[in-house]
Length: 419
Image 1: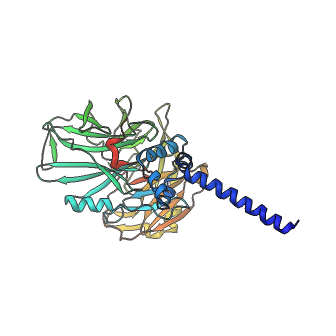
Image 2: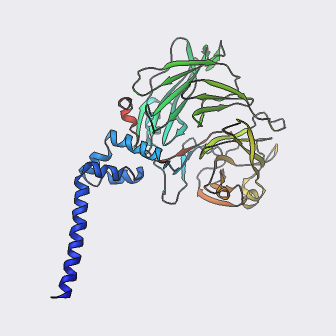
C-alpha cells in the first residue's frame, strides 16, 4: 500500500467533505439566511453582490427586518461613527468621522443634496436613532415657516417622505423626532411638535400651546396624541432618544415624551452656571445608554462640567470635570483674539463613553481638526483633518453630531412593515 497515495486520498476526502458542506449550506436558503443574519450590515451590503441567491436573500424585506431585530436583541448595534455639522466654519454641508478601526468612512449622504436640488430649499439632518436619520426640509418665507420631514437610511441610500402635518389650525412645526426600535413592530415612529396659532414673517402668534402628533408605519396621516405648554427657550428641533423617551431641553425646563404611554413630563433644568451669558447649554446627547449635558458660564469657556442624568432618581450629577488648558496649549490655533477679549475656538460634538471608564472621550472640532480629548487621562488624539476656515462669529448648537450604526432597515417599504 502506497502511504503517499493514502495521504492524498485522505486530503481529497476532506476537500470533498468541505465542498459538500459548503454546497449544502449554499443550497439551503433557510440555513444560509440564519448564518447571514449574524453578520454586520456593512458586510451584507458587499455580500449581496456575490450571486443572485445572496442578493435575493439579503435585499428581501423580511430578511432586512429580521436582521435588524437579531442585532437589536443581541445588543450588537455598535456605533460606526458620527455625522456632524462644524460650528467653527461657514460650511453648511454635513461631514462625518469614523470611530472604529474597521470603518474607514461613513456612507455619503447624496440624498440631502438631491432633495435640496429637487425642492429648492435647505435640507438638514436633525436627529439619528439606531442607524436612521431624521431629515428636515425648511421653507421659510415672510408669511410662513414650513418644515417637511423624511427618514433616511444612509447604508442603503433610501428614504421615506413623511406626509405634511399641517392643517388650518397649526402653522408652525417646531421639530420632528424619530424613535427607531428594530426589536418590535411598528419598528419606528416619528413625532411632530406643533405650536398653535398663526404666523407672520416666520413668527408664531396666538396660543403658546404645543401639540404632539405621531406618525406610524402604514398611516396616511398624523394622529394628535397630547397637548402641553412650556417656555420658548425649549428646542424641539433636536430631540434625544434615551430610556424609552424623546428628551428636549431649554435653558430653564426639560421635556420628555414617553414613546409608549405618549405622556409628556416637564421638569426643571439643573442649576445654571453663574455669569451674564444667557445661552448656557453647549451640549446635550446620549451615548451607550448615558444621557449627558454640558452647561457653560461663558460662550468660550474652557472649563466646565459634564453632567449625567440618573435613570432612577431623574437627577443630574457631575460625571466629569473638564479643563481644556492642555488641549489649548497643544493647539494654540484655538486661541482667537477678538475685540471682546480672548476666545477659544472649539465645538463639542459628543461625549463618548468607552467600554472602560478610562476610554471615555470628549469629541471636539477645533480649527482644522476633529480631536478626541480623554476625559480621564486628559490626553488628546487627532481623529481627522478638516477643511474650511474658522468663521469670525461662532454659533453653537447643543446638538450638532449624530451617531451612526449600519442598518438594513427597509425605509423605502416602510408602509409594508406594519404588522
